Length: 325
Image (cartoon, rainbow, N blue to C red; front, side):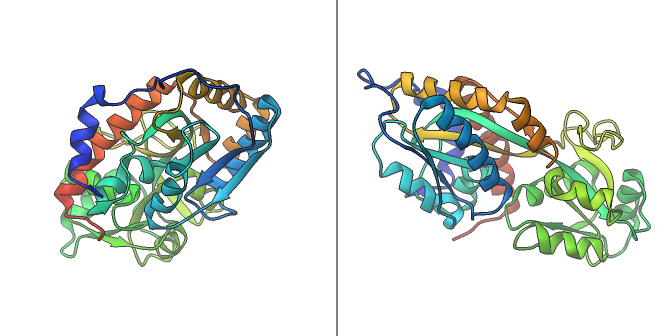
């Protein structure tokens, strides 16, 4: 079992992960490819995997199966991948939490995303947006920060769950602005957003993929984008940096990886096929309409990205005291 405090050490030891596999790979693929997801069927990650799977099947000439194995913060799905041969026919398709947050958040975790997996490519990303209810008296970021400093009770911010990206970004926002803010954890975005819309909770950071429709429907008011650049879906919403709060930027992202030891030629074949799918105009348009942007990388770039994300979030998780047994 992996102790959560070792993840930061693993992330900083960049030389410990090798993409190259020993020996030569047989003709790949030689059988159907399975995409294993730590998410339930029907969600945006499931839709993403099935759309990409159709393109993979066309390019590689083999059927692609999507296998949903939710639960345990990604450990069930990861275990299913790690039990299969390191031949590239079983691919772990997961998100920010499973690659960069949960291995530190869980006090004991069954896999190390750095040592146990070979990165293939990142897939899609969606920036987080700071939202309040349209009934909130707060209309700008400066008003929100001022109220958090002047209110005797302080403000509350919702998140998708303890240690979620929304929770961590809220903690980072609080540290940067110096306001009085209390975290309220929910089980997912839907109940959290519901309480933000009804003013039971003051604000929240949530992906544009789940908030854009509510913003356009005037259920939520967007104050700022937590990204280095404005969102194509919400071009009129300024970034936090534009409004004077720098260093508070993050998004949810998804990526693909295979079991460590998979031959480099197989990893490259999967990378080329997935990148080609992500560059398809139809795929891009489909996901842009849902607040997601294609985010293809080389295996090496994705490896470095995972390292940087673990190194970024692990200290904040540990300092916040968040943890799951």
